[in-house]
Length: 296
Image 1 (cartoon, rainbow, N blue to C red):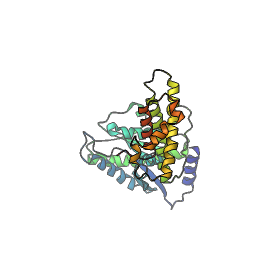
Image 2: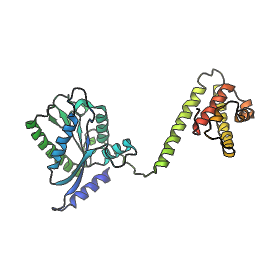
Image 3: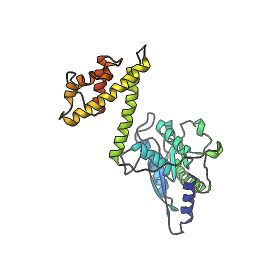
Image 4: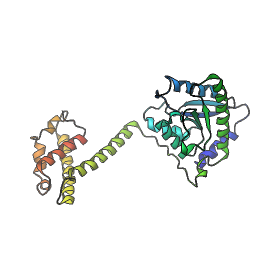
């Protein structure tokens, strides 16, 4: 974080009088209709903000919602990355929208500059009430909006310039903290999906094995150990069978008279286990699920 602030300062100092520095502004505000607000209200508020920022000549301002990006693969990743990287963020806390409050909390945790907007009918939120808010009328009366635009311009410029001079914008008031830097790693979508599904499967397996043994009163530890052993055995036998045989869509493998069931059940691991026949069939079915087959 310190390095990022230093880099921003250096960029600012390198700007000449004829060269406008790009200023990336993120918007955090409600998008969909909110009960108690006129239809299209948030679109009007966004337009007011954008018009105010267009009047800034000192910087070349780029403004958009933090959820907007050319890369639409992962919306959550885009939002967090934008919240972290944008030079300054404008947050409208009117209506106390939960998503807005969460994203504001993330920006605050990163100790990066932002300005707050709030309509006159929304109460102040205790935890951020000490931070200056730009207030506007909910009915968006024209005469007042002209003043609000001027406040947005001046507050945004003042806050951003202050952030270039200070190592900590907010957290210094609450103690000493070190803000973690976000690591940038490029991962092909195929690799990401495989990694994600592997993690999901691992979590499912943990829950599955806990459920399998939850009703056992005796020899719980041995039962759980036997279950894991059978699961591994079933995985090896089924993978070997699939490698040597054409199983089509795999639906035949869910038939409990299929040879793989007898092969698994005739092993010494199963014969010496505490797991009953019905549970073995369930383990085999779940193993097939893990391998990507569906029981049609």
